[in-house]
Image (cartoon, rainbow, N blue to C red; front, side, top):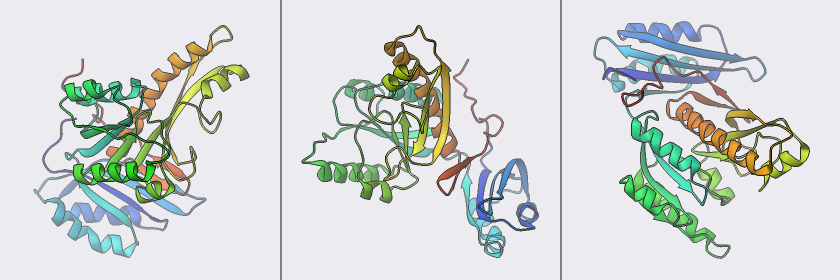
Length: 298
């Protein structure tokens, strides 16, 4: 996406009340800012208001100046809010075990610029994809996990997170359960891909379960990781059709394609600040025009 140096994203969450949109628009206009894209949602059940605004500073105001000017409005409406430079790429740490379809897909999207992130490394409990990662000039961290060394392994993982400055951890088919303590510490900062259309068919072999039930649609779910396994707020889902004539192996192959697409879309939404937590659910706004564009596509 082509952006100027003074392009920003404002995110707002607060209790719903009259005058929020006007307050936001006036505050930005007073700073010489022009809104280029805007989405909002007022949840009548929770009484929460959510808004994402893309804007450019036509008078050259920097993020600090805009934040200072916006502070009175934020205080008036008791907002959870942030103003971010739209050109800054979020630092992402990938984690993988022995299934590499999601990892390879993310590396390709990152390499051509279709996924606007900065990959700061890959962690794995196996050596399977070491060469792939190193060939992309990325740090590879092998952290073996056993029942006996799990606390030590998670400490090493957190060391990698802190040393790399990772702002988001992506479980790209990482087949180890993270501890409750780690999930709580990294709440809202770990995204998982589940090889099933949740909440159906949980567990280790969802495609076999789906096959045995004779389903006509299989899918994948990307969600935030919480202490409740596979129960985190859902960010993205998709499905693919299957027929009675297809085998469990067909289900797996078709499902893997969906997994890669769903995970990439979930990451894209998170790093562009389009996802808002709303209790145990999420509000996910559409991408801004041009958000998927890349100079190396086509």
